[in-house]
Image (tube, rainbow, N blue to C red; front, side, top):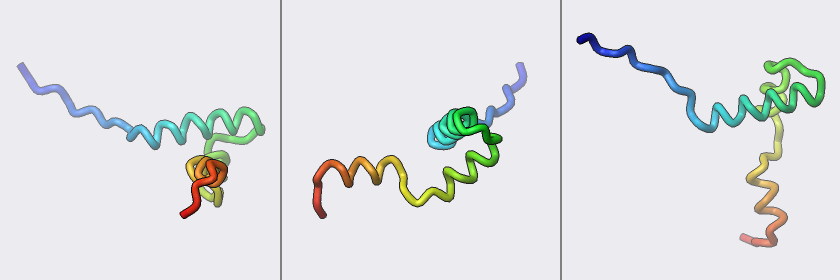
Length: 58
């Protein structure tokens, strides 16, 4: 029997970004590419926002 070809998988983070971009694109009437560009260039990330609101001071 022959070997199966290797499957290329996207990383989980890339997949989550793509899903978020699709949602954002539909909601705002943008293309997927435009939404991905905006999300990449955004200065605030979701993780940063939760740390600021939690009251933890470093």
